[in-house]
Amino acid sequence: MGEYAARAAAHDLDGMLALIADDAVYWFSNESTHVGKLAVAEAIRINFETITDETYELDDLRWIATSDDVAVCTYAFKWTGTIGGHQVGGAGRGTNVLRRDGEQWLVVHEHLSKGAHT
Image (cartoon, rainbow, N blue to C red; front, side):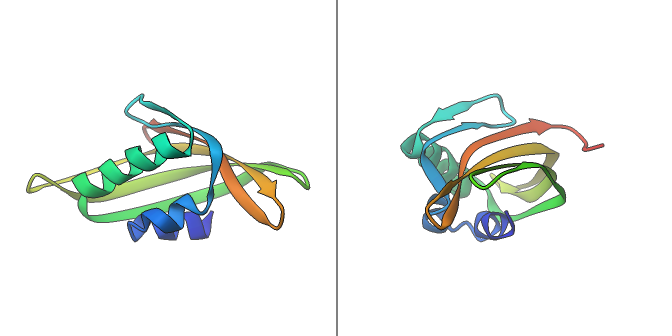
């Protein structure tokens, strides 16, 4: 998840996609749903093009379930950036489900919600 967050913060779309499963399902904090890696890629691309000078951070990462093939974590996230010349930001909570694919772990589900993490 550290590498995933670092690639997101760097707006490294190809790097992020290397960590996302082909059958991934993402639920963003704006209540949008993206099914499949191509749809997720398009949503992330639009975010990267829309938000400039972005900072993105994960905090309070907790692995709540792990096995040899599946892992689930929760975390708090926050971001700041510029949209249309205005400084903006947000924060919320996230849950990610990762699945082992050979020697690599891939994100198969991401669920982001607005609000403070408790």
